[in-house]
Amino acid sequence: MDINKIFENNNEWVAGKLSVDPDYFKNLAKGQDPKVLFIGCSDSRVTAEELMGLHPGEVFVHRNISNMVISTDLNMNSVVDFAVNHLNVEHLVICGHYFCGGVKAAMQPKDLGILNPWLRNIRDVYRIHKDELNSISDENQRYNRLVELNVQEQCINLIKIASVQKAYKERNIHVYGWVFDIHSGRLIDLKIDMEKELKDIMEIYDLG
Image 1: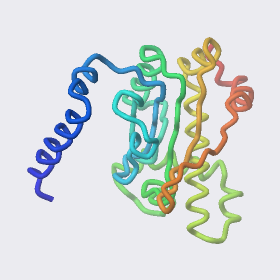
Image 2: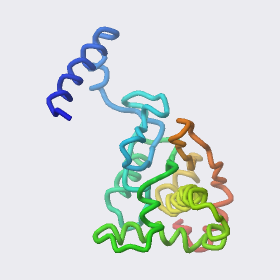
Image 3: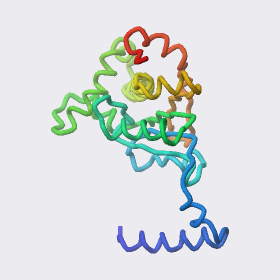
């Protein structure tokens, strides 16, 4: 790829936007008011705004390897805090995708160096759901089921965060678990029952 092509593309994009709305960037500069926080995978095939049909200013985005919500990740926690407490988003989305490289790497018995601590969190998801996953004979089906279960567990991790619990109690903020099917382009709603998940974890994780 010729890196200069990116600047050519940018010039064409700017011209296209201004041809439709001369005030597009003037209005964009006024600020953002997103209603959705999207936590997705860093995979280059998964573009948050495009796959949801949204535009700049409509979704606040955080991406990392395999869409993880890890309690010690200051970056992720800062994004969630800003989105919930300052942007007042209404919807929190964890979005994984089938055939995720990070999830597949976590299934392999290999030493992957600096990736080990990160992937261990996915391996913990496998351990929690080992009986179900080991009962799936087809490797690709098992792999994609782990993608779904990982999204489910990251939704639970999101619900454990104090600011999310507070926003749920005060203004009924909601958490969603989705999977992007790369083969079809479809978003699949895993239908996470936030009320049930809260009830299940509050005995231990209730932060007031």
